[in-house]
Length: 274
Image (cartoon, rainbow, N blue to C red):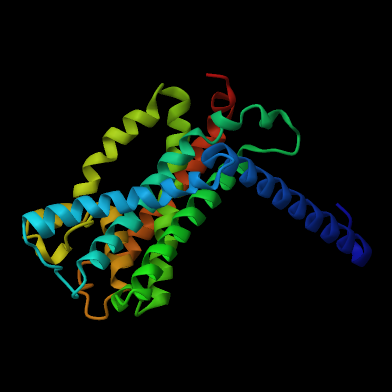
């Protein structure tokens, strides 16, 4: 390491160039992931929109046309359901999509410039940006057609919730990535594991509707807090008494630390061909 003004300047330039190089590597990996996931046709992007719309249609049919239920808060049942579906899918799809980050790019990891963290961050950025873009389209479309409840009343609170959601999904994804190196078909098993969370994460209900002691059990689910925090960004009179953002953030940070720790300890196993 060089010292003195000239040495520090040289080190700064070298560090800056290294960062720029890794940014270009991650950007190239993102473009590769886009082609691999969505195909050359832009129609492949439609699936990212069709999935939440399909779930929205099922919920609307079940709760509105069969059970005759109204929105627990606000006047738009569509915004209520959508504000639960988007954060849930953002978290769980991110946790699932990262499972194959290393395995799906193992050949590229033989290149000296490509590191496991590069392919992981590339998938994280792609999945996050995809669902945020989908959310913008869906909520923006509702607002354009006159459903003004789709316009967030507290964008800062909404951004905070999105940050915690992404961090939580990223942490779970890192842990899943390492487990998948030891457990065949972990992606399928994880899908079975998180399936019940769809019914326990506040997608179609609010925490205040659940009576104790069941409410206390549900509050151990960090995804529920993320969904509630996300939804609170759309309603100024939403009951936030049971939302603990600090708890969700602690779980998310803990998952990230554990995930990176497992990745470091089990790096050799993660890079082995399956």
